[in-house]
Image 1 (cartoon, rainbow, N blue to C red):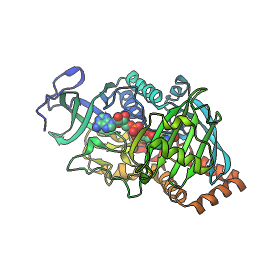
Image 2 (cartoon, helix red, strand yellow):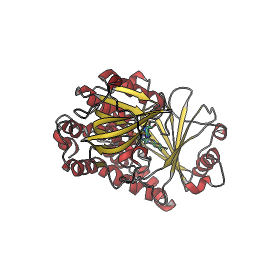
Image 3 (cartoon, rainbow, N blue to C red):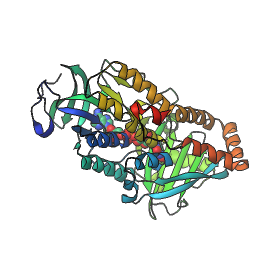
Image 4 (cartoon, helix red, strand yellow):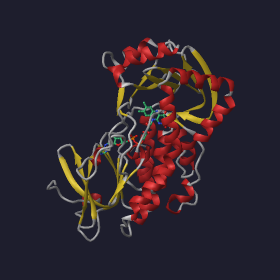
Length: 401
Ligand SMILES: Cc1cc2nc3c(=O)[nH]c(=O)nc-3n(C[C@H](O)[C@H](O)[C@H](O)COP(=O)(O)OP(=O)(O)OC[C@H]3O[C@@H](n4cnc5c(N)ncnc54)[C@H](O)[C@@H]3O)c2cc1C
């Protein structure tokens, strides 16, 4: 372990009587920022850290679903959507094998992740959390009764002590890579996520509509962020990138689906995610809980990753509050069960869709179904995005039952 000092708020030296922080939240995406806001509102001494400097970009399709907005609203956080000038969306159009179908969606928004995530972090700071950008964290384990978290900013490092670490560091769970906790490995057929923002005038994307193009090597969603900017995100087979650039692979995919592809895609700067589809064997341990993508992720087709991240941040609250009084080993199993309830339905559907989208005959069937029974398909999406009620939430049971 590092020989660094143990410090707390305002650099005060921590002693074993009390940890330096009540809660250390690792990762300031939607999961981490919401968890930090709720912890700070409880009056807990909350430290939120992120390895990146903010505002930071994130590989994402930027579709904030109705359930995500509703969850934010229940905690007075939905105003961020208006503050960042998010664009409403209420339709999705599928294009595959040169045919199209479209259905209504529960009202959501197209968002710029850099702005959205930064606005949520502002809320956490406004609630009283301390935010340290450019700070990489590692969970070291419990010593002297407290969780130890190694924090590094450039060459400087320290070990912070806390009652509990909330791990919200995304797909890779890099803060947990220790012998005690294995990383969440991606599945054999896991795809890679990519995204870019283009101004392509030669690409028609209607305001309010998600344009979803499906091909053999993956799928791509495009939304209009504003009059000038179109956000394109895709999930691609790793093989598709062996002999071509990301721009070439997405262009080929759009053309195969039957859509046009903007020339600008070949010159755009693309962001890429680690391989998707991760199911970690452990989502909690002594004095730590994982939330958001760090607790597991399938694929982005249904556009509910942010909703799950936000809902898990809300649902974990009773456990990190109870952990202030004392740690009970039962918390680990309790959180695993509660988290499974949050993600079960969505991940099940997402896995089913991932399977379907890899089979051209099944895609044909899906398109035919959404054309012949648009109301039924639309209702399935609406069910998926059913808002949860977090109003009475002893250990999250009411909310996630
Ligand atoms: C191609 C693609 C398209 C998608 N489209 C959508 C969509 O349209 N709608 C939707 O709802 N979801 C979508 N998602 C999913 C969505 O992006 C994620 O589910 C969501 O960002 C998860 O939020 P999070 O807070 O758990 O993690 P993240 O947003 O990934 O945030 C994790 C943060 O942790 C930080 N971090 C990592 N390691 C450390 C460390 N050791 N120390 C400190 N900080 C660390 C990172 O810098 C990052 O800021 C998409 C994903 C992909 C890949």
